[in-house]
Image (cartoon, rainbow, N blue to C red; front, side, top):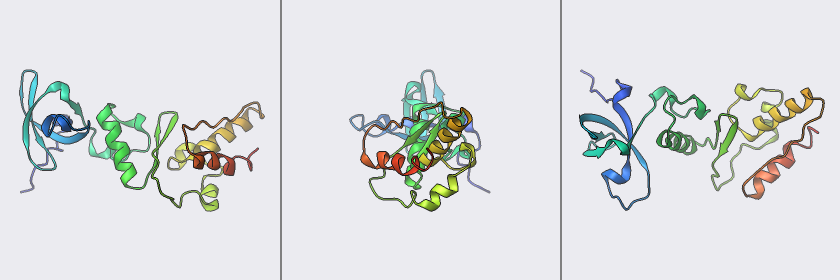
Length: 181
């Protein structure tokens, strides 16, 4: 007989503030757990990674998305849109080498602090002429979308890339956009 993981009933699976279970002095982080019992404003949870059980306040838990939303490209698609789910999705994508993630109209980028082979001429060509939803999240998809919008408005649009910091992002916009304007 197959062992039950708790994932069979998505309503019973959630994220728990890791600091509540391990050490309140630690930085905020979330860990997967399943509800074992409810008592008023508290729930007994079992941590998925090690089976540890703890009684925590309902305020320290957030719903988890079903597994089909693992590494989702656009966080607007998440059924449970909360801090834990967003951070979990970004973390999963980042550790899979997927540094770009959409959040509705915005593109979230996590700096990997290393060179990735995702900015070549071949990659630019893969995104050329494609709509945003036809390709994985990338700065080139955003640039292509802005360029197409500009063309449809007969050039009456300005493209103003905004970056918090880092010269590589400025370089990216300079590499991709001049061939378009």
